[in-house]
Image 1 (cartoon, one colour):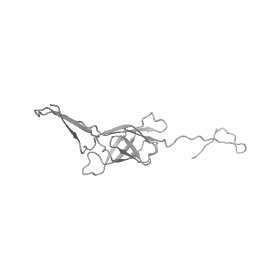
Image 2 (cartoon, helix red, strand yellow):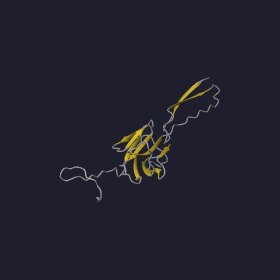
Image 3 (cartoon, helix red, strand yellow):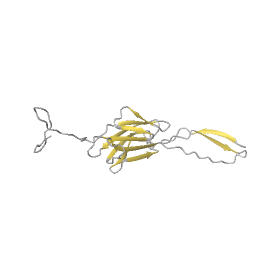
Image 4 (cartoon, one colour):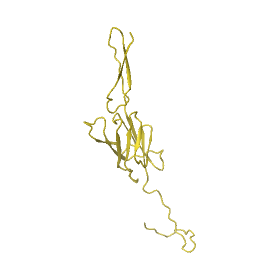
Length: 178
């Protein structure tokens, strides 16, 4: 009674983090005992925000994500798309393979914003995320990558001044052409 056998799942299914070691027990009659081990899946959430007001979500972007995904055949690199015209947050669960690096490219930019520079994210064996190389405008918190866009017209003030003393003049009946 109470015999124990240890097993380890190898290799882990793509898109999962694995459960580590699983202990199986059975009685002396060798009656079948069924133990089910469910692997945690890799998860990555992409969130789009405005640089000036990061608490506000920003819809209208699409990202292409290139890398080796769980549904790849023979390790062929694939491209998947995240977000879309009406979404500011998107999550892919069970798609990213631990140990691989993925390239995120903003293929559609929200109207009136600069396009982000592509950046790379590595999914570590324990499911944590880390940047590979430069990642301007992007941050990681847990399993969420936040990508921030900057407005094209960040604002400008044009002041007309007196040529003799540099004092500000009123702009009545003045037209500026840029």
